[in-house]
Image (cartoon, rainbow, N blue to C red; front, side):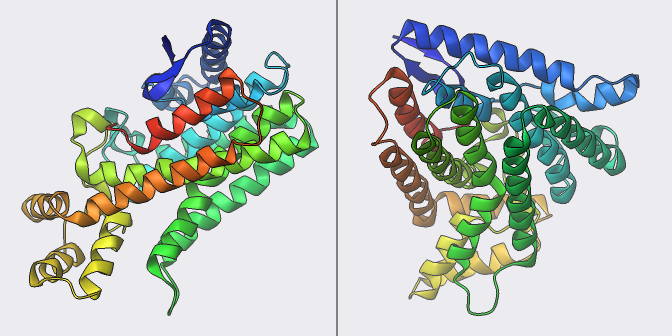
Length: 336
């Protein structure tokens, strides 16, 4: 058995392993080339997160989706570069909004330079992604534009919060579908589409991408609380410190509202207060790590991963399908 890609995904087919490894290598080269500029400082800032590494989850999914058509088709690798560039651009912007200091184990761009450099670098990456996708045809441009609209809408909805009478958990899941699921759905769609797969296969892989994308983000919600910085490459409790309400907190509030203990309500009060103080943040993390709400949120992530797996059922039984199915477990129940 061999291993390829992030999360330790096992690939039992040597030909598939070779294809995916070669594809990821080509994507990496494409990312470096796409982030070059005649201005040396722009190159440095644009390649800051590229060179920091990362799981390359979206390119991996796209390359596996391409296996249901011609994985060597000329649009496959460029479309993977487009999706990853778009993702990287959102990270520059997210770190500004979150006032994050660490990303992928290195100082965030806003911490290393300043907010202006970070936001403009994110915009530069968006422009490069747009330039590449324009070469892939009008349909690819439309798919990218619609996903970007959903991504931004999800971010705005997160900032605005749930409307009066709206279920906070349903609102959170909708935000995640937009912010994270939409771009991962594009990875599934473009990978299959650029490889010339049939419409039914393309739609199936797009649905799979969205569902596993939600599972991916819900697992991140859990990791923000359960992991340490060495595991995740991010400062633990970043979302809590910045007042970003994630699923473990929402599950805690739900439990407290349904007859929870005084300790539940006290933890809710702590989480609703100022967590910029390191001591209060540590207390909040300890409380959530010991609370069943965290395990409930973990089970929610596993549930969406299982939905993603079930989405694959109509596809032919191939090594690529097996790898995508295994990715469901690896994404939802991970430590980093």
